[in-house]
Length: 119
Image: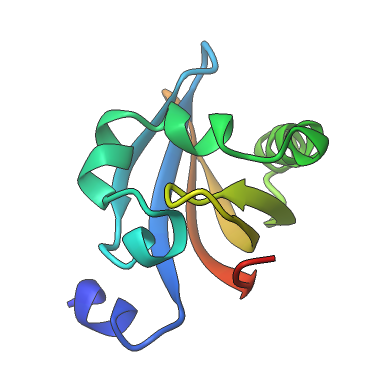
């Protein structure tokens, strides 16, 4: 049902998890993530690092710091960053997610969308 709603929005829903060691998993992402990143949800689930390696070098530190703060303080994550779309152009993404503590680490349930395509 969530997939039907995501088809009506300009963005994509996701669940991101970080274990206590610091490894990330993407157990869920709406298929609309493809429009935003150029990568299918299936690909990003198998290789979640593809998201991080495609964040602009000038933005990656801020993104990592915001994720750390959000996970530590259990505050909402809100960040904007440039992402290299698989087609080769940069897009500005807005990412909002609510953290939840798990015994195994932290889970963020969130939403991302393109602020200005082809920037």
